[in-house]
Structure formats: C-alpha cells, structure tokens
Amino acid sequence: MHTAHRSRRLAATLSAALLAGTGLTVAAAPAAHAAASDAVVKLPMTTYSALAVDSVHERVFVADAMTGDSYYKGTIAVYSFGGERISTITTPSHISGLALSADGSTLYAGERSRIVGYDTTTLTQTSAVSANLDQCGRELAFSGGEVYFTTPYASYSSQCATTAHTNLDALVGGAHTRTGWNDYGRLQLEAGPGDRMLMGQPTAPQAANPFVTVFDTSGDTPVRNAARRFADADGKGALNLKDMAFSADGSKVALADAAHGTRLLNTSDLSDAATGYPALPQGATASAVAFSGDGRYLARGASATGSTPDLLLQPADPADSSAPLEFVFEGSLDGDRVVPRGMEWSADGSRLFAVTTNAAGSQYWLHIIQPPAVQYDTRFTGGLTHSPGTAVAGEPLAVRGKLELDGPAPAEPVKVTATRTDASGTHQLGTATVKEDGTFTVLDEPDRTGEATYTVSYLGDLTHRPATDVTHTVTVAKAPTSIALTAPEEASMSGGIEITGTFTAQGKALAERPVLKVVREDRLGTGTLSSVTVAADGTFTINDVPRTRREVTYTVSWPGDDLHAGATASAEVYVRR
Image (cartoon, rainbow, N blue to C red; front, side, top):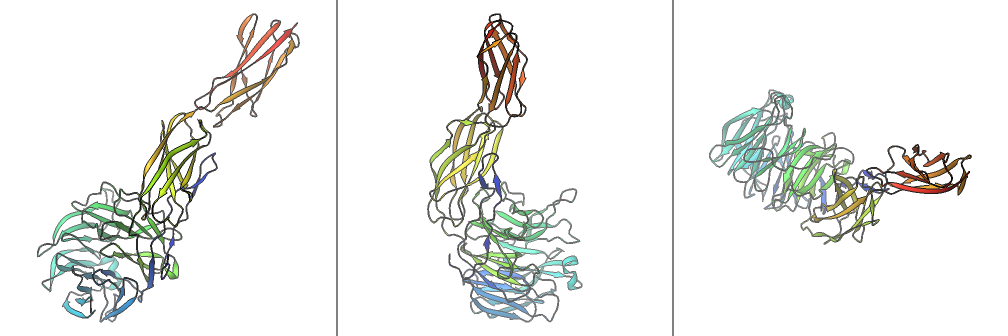
C-alpha cells in the first residue's frame, strides 16, 4: 500500500479468549482490515469551523473559526482531492460555516456580518450579502435552492456555549430574510436530498432536552415536519448532539450523539430505525457521522484515546454485518480524534475527508481516505468436519472447515466466528484464525449431551462480502467412566476379604465424589452391601466377611449422571473355611 502519508494505525489489538479446557486462544472481536491508500495534510489553522467538498471541481474547503473578536481575519484553505494545497482565501473577519450550491459553482461562507459567495473555479468573490451580527459561529446549508444560515447571539463571546440564542435566516432571491425559527444554543444545519434540511440543537443550559427536526425547503419559507426530543419523563436519555447526516436516499437520519453513540432514525417521523448500528468501541465517544453519496458507506467519527478507534468505516446498511475498517489517530502526525462536524464524502463515495484535532484542540489535520471500490465473493467449501469422531461432553472437540476468498487477501489475518446451539440455547465460541490455505479449526468443549449444531460465519470486510453460513450437527455422548477391581483369588471366612479399586471418569469433573453400589452374590443368594465412596484420588476399598464357602462374586457399579455414563466391574473370590 503506497501512500503519501500513513495517517493511522489500524486498531487491530484484540482481546484473547481462552476456551476452557481446550487450550485454544482466539480473538474475541473481528480484526480491523487494511484500508486503501490515504493521505494526511496539516491544516494552517488553530481553530476549525466547517468542511465542504466540491465534487465537480474536486476541491476541498476547510474554514477556521476565529470567532470572538472583530479584529480576527478568516481563513479558507483549499485542497485538491489528492491533498495538494491549491490556495488560501483570506477574509476580513472570522469565517464560520460553509455551503456549496447544488451545481458546485458557488461556495458560500459565513462571515461576522455577511454571507459571501465565491466562484469555486476561480476562487474569487462573486457576492456579499449583509447579515445580522454573528460572534459565536454560524452554520450554513444549501437546501431547496436557497442558502440557510444561523445567526447566534450572546452578550459576550465567552457566553456563546451557554447562553447563545440562535435565529434561522436565509438568502431568498439573494436577499437576507429572517425565517422566524429560533431557539437556544448554537443550532446545527444539514442539507439533504429532496429539499430536506435538518436542524439540531446541541445541549445548552436552556436546552436540557435538545431537539432534532426536519424542514421542507421546497417553498419560499421552510416548513417544519418531523421533530423529536429524546429525554424520558425522568429527564434521562437526552440528546448530546455533535453531528447529523442524511442517508444517500434521504430515508434515514444518523445522529452522532456523545451520550448514546450513533442513533439511526427514520426521516419521515424521526422514530428509531428498525435496525440500528452496533455500539462504538468501548471508550469511544461519537463526534461525527457521514453517509457516502453512493449510499454504500457510513463513516462514524469519535473521540477516543490509546488504541481505541477514532473512525469506523462500514457499510451504510445496518443489516450488513461486515467488519468495519477501524482507524486510530495518534499524536503529531495524525491528530488524536475526529472533530465534531468534521467529515464529508465525495459525491461518488470514492473518498472520505475527515478533520482531526489534537487533545488540546489547537492543531488540525485533513485526512483523505479511499475505501475499496470493489467487493469480492467469499464461500465456505467442503462443509465442516469434526474430531474425534465421537463427541463427548466435557472433552475438547475440533470443528474444521475451509474458507475461500476471491480477490486480494486482507492485510490482517482473516477470522471466522462460531456458535454452538444445543438444548440450552446458542453459545458464542469466539473467533478462529483462517490459515493461508483457507483452513480453520474451531475448538470447543460441549457441556451438554444430545445434538449440538455448530454454525461458522465469515462477516466479510469492505473488500470481501460475507460468506453464507455453514453448519454441522454433532451428537454429543456422555463421557465414559470405568471401574477397575483388584481382589484375591482365594480368601477364608475367618480372615475376610479386601478388594481395592480405582474409579476413573473422562469429561467434565464430577461435582461430588462418586458413591459406588456393592452387591455380593454367593450360593445363599444376592445381597447389597454398604456403599463405598471413592476417594479424591479415585481409589476405594471394600472389606467384607463372607457368609459361606465357595465362589463369591462382588459387583461394583456407578449409575452415571447427566454428563457421564455409568460403569460396572465384578470380581470373583473363592472362599474357604
């Protein structure tokens, strides 16, 4: 893999699970897989406001956010899709918020007291419309053929995060218009397909239960449709919004919620989608979310430390369980986390642009990531086999198979997941590594007799499609036990008889020491003697005073239990007077 910079270390540190009694160590979670080439550039700014991607001219615009002082100038850094610096636009006041026209011809930027348009080819200013004063940072969205923007107000810039009150404004026919929609907090905007626009409310002292709502922007004024708040009657579950995005077809909305991870909602009523996305890795807090324009991928950005992934790239379909690509950003070459509202895709889904920052939030990087363009088929071949031929409860059992993958081999070892389903339910067996020749071995120790069905799955990755599961049913028998007796050939009635023995059991250890039944048979009949308890080392002793002469047979037996078969042994002694 050839890259200008290697901007991430794949999060492939996996916790190991040791299957009890088998000695097999397997990974407890799918490994991260290698990504296509990616590049990273250091941004010439110490604050971040917005990111916009022009897929028509293949340009990326990144704006700073030097709000809070009327003397600050603004910066819009312009890059190619390959990461080359094209130009820098310097503005007379701070920049906050970027939006592109539908045809990509105009970039709109929010300044302190106006909304400015730039030609995306020449990067020259083409328009400037006065707007109400902004000192906290605007949000811009191009929706329904118009530019919408927020105008937050606070008495002092230090109060922006706590007491800001925000109006939703628009440029209608090129003129500044106040829509009448307003609320507390620095409201976020996101344009979507079908003349839809999202408005989301970050948490604020005056917004203990923040909302998200969908606007119809097809008319002259925005019309609010579905809306939702998330806290329950006890105030729990409130939204902590960091980012939001429409799916490519506009039917779904994804929210990056720092309190609850990635929420997936139905756009029509903002109800929870029937199938959501898995939780982010332990220790990762949601910070950004973006769907690719081709509808194939979802990018989930996070704030995390150490080897915990800061970015997951996965199929947009939540029902697709393919393992995601995981990226860990670390330190002075990468940044430490994905910034809120810091991800955008190219229209064709060929590139993801992600902005990261350091722990202090004073430096910024732009990452350019190319997901795989093709997925290859995979399949299990030859079915599954097991050994030993007779499966025994409480003893190791090996289930073997073979997986074939078309196309290039993943950079990280391929792993399959396995389950065992028996009368007590379905049990996760972890994962097993696939060897270079495609073979794998899943080790288990079944703990119940009867039929056990093993299911092996390959979840795929962004390069390989999941394989159709393969199953194999095994009949698990009780573990065998045995009794061995040592008795004299002859004995006398006066001297008595001593018989020693050994009890052994395979499989799972017995919960209690076995109690053996002893039966004596002589010419006077058959009778049961006192039971004998097996010692901890498996030995036992039987002492008896025979009641008559000639042949006496002693039979020692154990009935077995749920997991162990019974055992019987006999010894014959000739008794003299």
